[in-house]
Image (cartoon, rainbow, N blue to C red; front, side, top):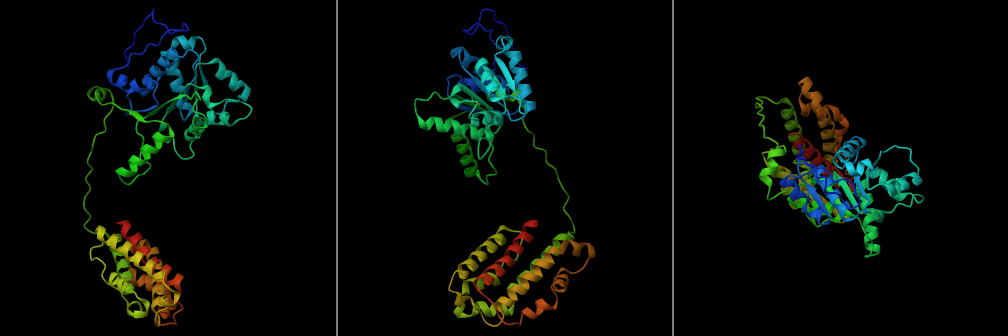
Length: 403
């Protein structure tokens, strides 16, 4: 995959044979910041050769610092073995003298043995959780500043309570305890820093800044000048359109529409209208919102209507308790409607299979007790008013989001 060469005269200061790596132009661009000793995140797609870039940086680092200690971390034992084998192959001088070591998760090593392993090797491959365990172990006496370079594969996981972030927690603590501390250089590797499910560009940018801050990184290493060369070697995703036929008839959607009709009918009922029109309740704005829902439920304006109406209800619920006590059976109607809709929506799928009417199913499931609530005495309170009418709107919203 990579060009190699032998240079018998070129040796690192302690006499180890140099590696056999020649970086491509775009890989050299990715390595430039790290070769200068700057903390960075190397961002490049799959098959771009980020491991080769990291090994070149490690080689250069040990040339400049013969007593250096490098930790190369991967999140699984399988990847750990692959990276270790690659390093032994491309850094034969270090490998032949036992300077490249591997510690697998689950190995039965004591803290004393681990400390001696750190002392005798130049490059140590292990999982981030393993390093966390020994940094936390008061008997091992392994400190973050014993290492001179940390390489974090898949570094986009450095947030929250991840092992990577725990390790960087020790780094940050040392950094702010004393500015004279000799902290290790940080080099992260990732195909993509991720977005942490951000909903927009601003959220994605905030997540990236968060990752960079956790890693004490100010600059990213990305390919700009040699992008055309990168595209020759790395895979590029292709867009493949998949066409689906439009349904002529959608029985599930029809049933859901019936359920939403039923809910809106309840919200527009005489009992609730009377309640909201009572000047004592000061609910004119809510009355207008409830009686004018958008006709097209497939547009975003319908969802906006739901959220706006919910806010109006919440505002009304914060007023004095007396203002929330309506006439006759307003809240009773809301309670009845809620029970009916909850029962009806639960049985929508069953109704589709039976071919029955959703509205009829709702009324049958709620029974006579719900019907009696329309004319029964009002037992409303601030909590009942808020929870029942918001429950109705939440049900509509859930049904709306299905399609």
